Length: 257
Image 1 (cartoon, one colour):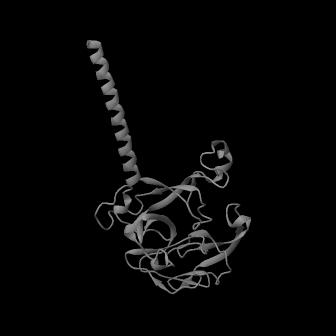
Image 2 (cartoon, rainbow, N blue to C red):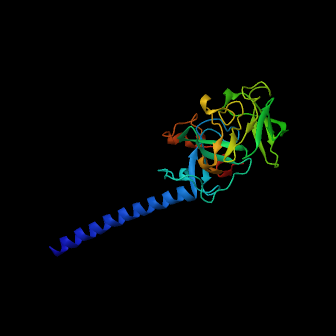
Image 3 (cartoon, rainbow, N blue to C red):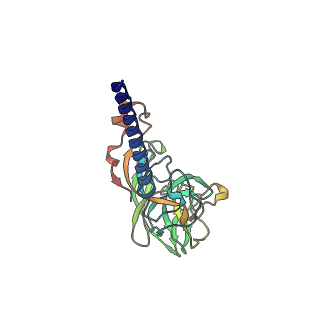
């Protein structure tokens, strides 16, 4: 009988240790995703060429402080940001869509609080001055535009940061190439996709399924680097034997600029 009792006690202790380990790991992951880094995948092409469909990025949660949207499972009932900081112009950020906070968007910050933003003939104007826009080598990717080379430009923001953009149409002819002046509120930012003719962003009001201004409270974090990239046009996730051809190895562990 003594042997049986010891065996049951040992099994009970083992089960308790397993449960304790699972709970500990779960809490550690939750804390990490809330206060340090959280992974996100890119499901659409609005940020091409910077981010491709199937890219996976780590987002730093601490970059702009913490709001109720920093919590991945629940949104605690408080407003504003703790240790809040305003993004730098040119940062690529994940935010909660203002008209539907259950949806995550990723765009580039173009306008800061108090800025005046306008598109004039396809050229971004910041506070009344056009940014520098230079033609670059065409963008080509067999996943996008059916193997058609897409016009690419290098955009230089007022502070000197550069990034690529795509223009499917001739500058000045796109749907959002000419806009009114947007006065960015003191508690918001203005975000745009790098795929300028294929992005519903702050140029488009929420009533037209766009983004509008993004409240600082809605910021989740800054995209830091790609840790994985997968082309599901080559193989589905379950086709393990095809993975070597579907993984974009050249994009792994590269910074998001």
